[in-house]
Length: 328
Image (cartoon, rainbow, N blue to C red; front, side, top):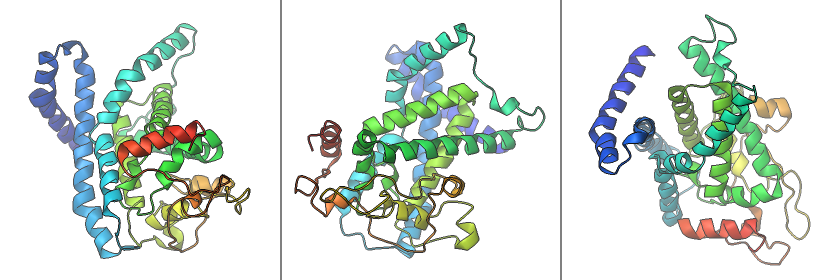
């Protein structure tokens, strides 16, 4: 792990010195060099993730696809979402808009006597070992992600944003980042807040996010693959997560009511591990591959119309705002 860390640090330092530092000095942002160094890390991780997507997961999709890709336009839109997130553009926006407020909040809590909790200090000599602390933080953040995901499907207002992610009927490895920006802003703000509260180091947080994102891209792949009866209960597979996206199964807790309006709820909310779904009774291990999407895309809703989630990036974002306001 030390060797990998040293290799990554060297690459991050080289990228920062060659690209970020000159640009920041030229644009008068020399006072934000530390943030620029972190941004270089996010960009490097994103480039590595894109390489894995193209070189590994892409061929797997072509090897055993669940369905033929017939709507390439919607896949191209998903690729745009992926580039915005994996190349750090959304992270930069988050840093500029949210981080100052979080810093102020944590500063106020510190003055009030409430300090952050160093999770890796629970068992000195054990939990502070690099691999142990990374696994511990992965476990904690996966539980937090499960809770956030349940909230996205439980609260009507949140589902109006999150439903954009489920409206993809041509799911591929690019579909993970297909989210409304407000949905991402809320989720990432909560994760950053938790990271500050439990004392995870910036480098570890980047590693946690990178592992999670890459696994999620694999889970969304158009890939007919599962791990077997025991493996499915150890790590989430494309089959397990595809059922979460299945029409009428994954994000509904009962039959449609009120002229096609679904009861929010569903199955398979886990992000990395299926353990939380097993613990809270939301796991579904059926070996099936159903069409993906949202029911009101194919059946009329209470207003008698089939819902349009938009075709391109900005259309989807705008229609998400209209749904949030109850106008679409």
